[in-house]
Length: 123
Image (cartoon, rainbow, N blue to C red; front, top):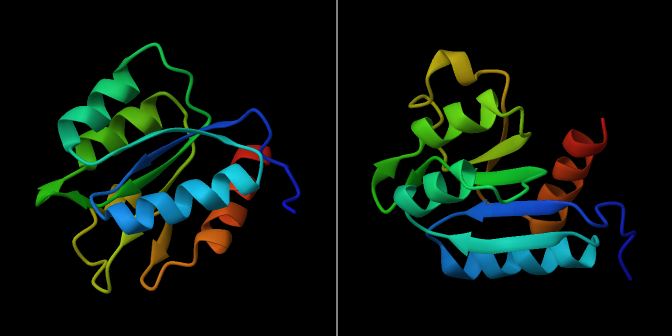
């Protein structure tokens, strides 16, 4: 049974890898979080971030269906919402000003990412 340290925290998952999205959703629910329905396009991600939905943390793929998500990352930073980038093996494509943002590289272990998010939100 999970520790439920993320109880009542709302987590946005933005990835176009549906299998990973559902694995992450399971890990966050196990930790007690509420998962905002996984989104898989930059448009839907921006809509969620700009809406009135309360977001305590986010998992953001660097690319969603071939489109960079840096505009979404900028909005998360501006709203002071902690987030983690999901990155492939090549992280050199990230702009330098996102150097302070945590990254989770492949292969992604959902429980590890849940723990990382817990540290970001509860710190």
